[in-house]
Amino acid sequence: MMISGPADIGKTALVKHVLGSLPREIENQCLYLAGFKDLQDLLRKLLKRLYQAGHPALRRQLHSEGVRASSLEAWLKSSPSPRLKGTLYRAAEQGPYHLILDHGPPLTPAIARVIKELFWMRNTPVCLLVRDEGRQRIEQLNHFFYWGRRQRLTLEPLPKPMAGEVLEQCIAQFGLSHLDLDGFREEVLELSGGVPGAIVKMCKLAADERYQYGMRIKTKLAHIDYLMG
View (cartoon, one colour):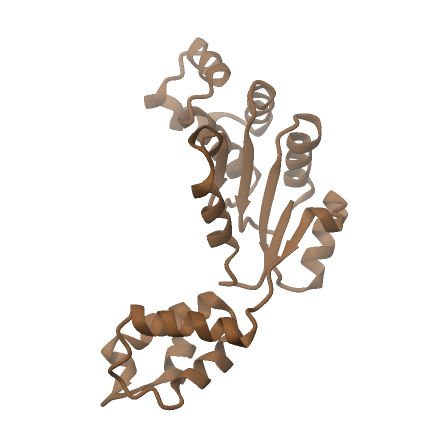
């Protein structure tokens, strides 16, 4: 499954909310990776997470080779990709695990091949979280994985009434009610485009005295610094 949408739309928050609501035994089967740099980094992080999750077959295999928790990092760094890949595939066949890959780099054929091996041949569900950075990125993913409508969830900006509710919650949360908010609400809703993360982060900045003059808020400055953050 692919969850897509612009930055700060709530992709990560949605997945973490779902993971936190699962029964403990199922949550322990979900391996969440907050980003990876390349194929080698993906393989290392997946194996490390499986080891930390107590995967019995993986632990038996590594322990038979003399690899323990204290030496796992060194083994991961010294092992070539084919060896890491084979170890990962064997481990994935031995238990029900779900992978959540959050905001990885643009996919290469090699990375896509590993992901396809896992969720097609190894029966390991995979969820990708990606930013909509243009049609080309989505077309690339469709080319690699043949996404259908049932496998894709696109998060859109909030309707204005809902965005307004989020804004009011943030005003209360960050203690902005005592300030002169004349024009502030309208500017935040316009500049954020209804993206909830943008509303939250702009209000958090607005609570800093550096973004205030007297009782007014420097909303445009907060927006600029949010974009650069």
